[in-house]
Image 1: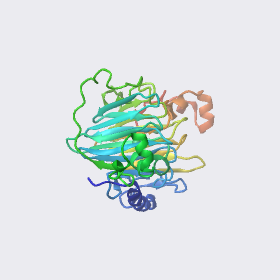
Image 2: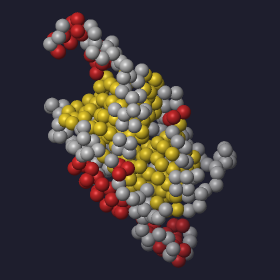
Image 3: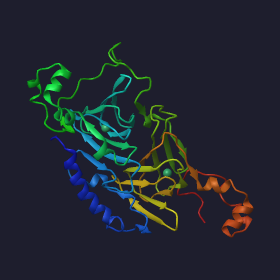
Image 4: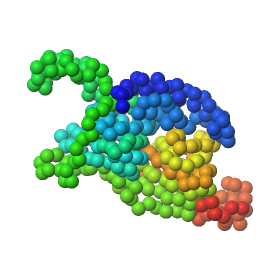
Length: 377
Ligand code: MN
Ligand code: MN
């Protein structure tokens, strides 16, 4: 794998994003998109970017996504996403495929080295230094999320970039080496580079070899027993389940063919989505008569600004799997069905110009995910 620069990636991303952004209102692939185009585009084909092993969806490529940015990253065995930190965002990740090792340090001096496999999540608080390494066998593929859509261009600080722009006599004093020792160091930011596959970690860190932080950075999301519903399932990891994740909540949602993730909104957070498998339609309501439904395929990213009403349908023949990300450590939602069921029937009758006999047939609360066999008129 050649070194990948972020500048190079940005060019490719702009080419892809511009194209897809313009076409999002009605391209051939998504001919059934419909609704009000005064609502900003909320779909971005992150995997359609050309080249590179890190494909970004930031405010540059996907303007609506101010609150959450994402990266689809791949590392070959021995591939290294070099030491860096994010000045303006925390980092959350979900491993789709392969194995990854992470290192992370905290200001108190505690540090942790952990291995991650499919279904595992990591969280690094804003500003904490970290690195990622592909362990093999085969490519590792993971989705990164950041709680600021501008995290990349203005907020990522890489160790090679820093050292390349520091006088070598200062480095010599700081690191106790002759200035000549730095002659072979990279002259600019490496971003991703490649070396040997690292050795396995000992099953338990040797006593005293690590300063284990009080809160681990690892959570096994797919090992969590899901909440199951008539039409699918949901696993949620907030700060309640994963205490270090104070600014982000993640979720893994499945919908069976024809199932509906009911109308709802999130009072406290934006929502970012990555379609892992299957086909979906997401409807978004943005107030003032603005509503739009877009179709999504695997590798596409969706975005719901805080407070916007939305729903998901599985429009395909197979299971729909979606990764969800919220920029709050507290998970909150209000469903339409629960809201309606919480009001007096007389009020609802007046509100909708219907009789209380019709109100009596409303659901008594949310089903969260209804199946295709749910009663339909
Ligand atoms: Mn990072
Ligand atoms: Mn939602």
